[in-house]
Length: 283
Length: 283
Image (tube, rainbow over all chains, first blue to last red; front, side):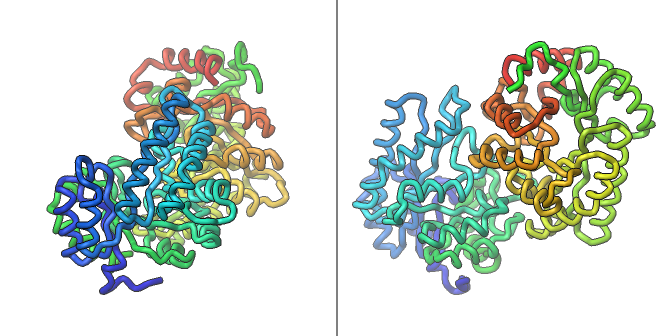
């Protein structure tokens, strides 16, 4: 496992960690000033902005774009809505390419309104990702399927485990031609007894395109917006990072924390400093 | 799949559904009067009671005891505490036998205080269940491993999926000599893409000892105490029941709803009537 001490250049900040309260330019400067090597912006950070100009600003700051967050939901109540979702995601994929992002993070989406059919939602996900794959390859941006914790199955992600995400990779990209992989987030995967085995499987085709860290607090007051700073919860982060890196992942370690009640209430520089310290000491 | 219309004798009420507000004798009478075929009491219902007398009362009311809820946590911070947990569970197992319960429901327990080692917790679970198995066989009570939703991995159950529970069954009871099985609860399992495959696997050794229904509400305000009445959420209950019964399960369909804000606020007879109606119409 790589040593992170003195190597903040191996670490990145997902802008969600800072609560999307400041302009993207301000956030880019703060992240670079603190010495991080990368940043993962969200679409909402770029609304109304010139994407090429933001890309230049990130590049000039010396930051890698570890990922661009994130797709809108693929499962939809009608075929027209499903097609519109694909086209929306195609536009975001092109922005990811403009940003020079290593990957475009795909959050599957949950059940469409009125549906109880998870299998159908999963088929729509497969069709939608399949429709984007060729362009992703041409653009040189990996589509990173991010399985979310099963607690989000209804509302956010019908893709719930690493095993399921790898199955989808194998279906759509059986010969590992590239352009498709997974985003591994400890918050979503830590509970899974199959995780060591599935990470070994991911290694075979170098499927890991991104690695996200935060922590699972006990108690968790809100499964969406009460995620913890690394070290404040119960996830064995070094154990998972070791397995992720043993599986061939050599990209950045990205901090992504949704924390409405705690970290989003703090100053950007304070949160960044604590992230830097915990990455070295805890992860 | 069995027809439930006119067959409330195939259905059971877990006393948690009624919020543990009334004496067990009162609950037994109400459940029997409404025409249900079974009941699943909790240890808390029997505190300070003569278990044999309660068993007689249930038998006289014509009810099957579909399960006895539930084990205390197996993983513990010290070997002494782990042994004490096993002995506590052994006493409850004997009460389950006195009650004539079809199974003793095992809820694994989560991480001991201060631990981040889920694998160690799972080893403690395996050791603890192994220590109870011979007596369970002698008593004729099946130990029913209940995998809980992964959202409870930290605090309530290191056993998170049906696949993991079946692996544990295969490890401890490789020749399917009996005394060990699983409790399948739609709330805990519905999100899992591997569920159809794992239910087929459960069929091989007739591992399903209990089947619980409720529903997953959207939104879910509290993952522990905001479970829904069947039909009020997004779980495809008939789809899962069909797979469970195709896997050889011929026991009762048991309603278990934790609902502090809704059903636990209603009168027992009202909740029982709605359960009866939804079992027939929705499940």
